Length: 331
Image (cartoon, rainbow, N blue to C red; front, side, top):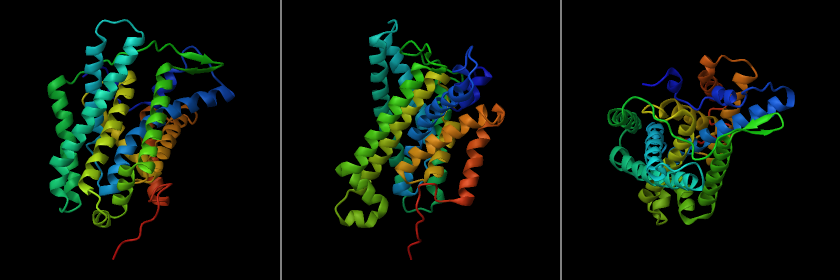
């Protein structure tokens, strides 16, 4: 595979801080806002991916460990489509349009893939023990990552920027167009999802199904359709996250492994099954990783332990998550 930096399979907050520092010595307030920007950027990625975990768990109480690999597939689809649409065009309006077209098609492809995985690997196990679908999810994850390595090779592929990524200086704070893209896209996607769940008929059906599938069916809700839509939306959001990560860290077969695990941690920290909790958990985890490395001097080789250390603390102190609610067992 490629160089060793590519095998840090996560949107590294240390590297984010690095590309924001080139030639600059930032101190005090400027330093704080620099790290805040980097943390929000990283957290936006985690939040987008965490939404897929939390939506599926909220309805099925299933941890979809294949979610990170759907992210990887979405990144590959976006990469190939963007290269095809762009051709040899120089950076400009067309490359930006081509990028968003590639992203939309990648979202659609990943949504179909998510529904296919649900139909093949999860529906037949609805009445099985709770361990069975979990093992099936792990199996799907290995199938997707190994298939990608076989089809596209184990080397990484560069996802070219559709725009000039020259950093912008706001005083002593340095922001790249890529960071702005991540923040804007993440915010727009989260707002659209929140409005969809709160105000549309399908969104209300999702909330009803998450509360009680049996009662939802008696009310005339097509539960199977709701579950499939949940997988489709979560997978589409994962594709967006994969493409945004790929712009800085390239595309390779195992890129979704650690990123997916950290997004799962974010969902648990915020309160898995709670959409607002997934958003909050993702942003919080991004900020903790960024400030942990940049301010508190945690070695970069140990940066992944921040997320899992936070997970352990949350499970010990508030196992339902920061925004989660304690659910009583039905008897």
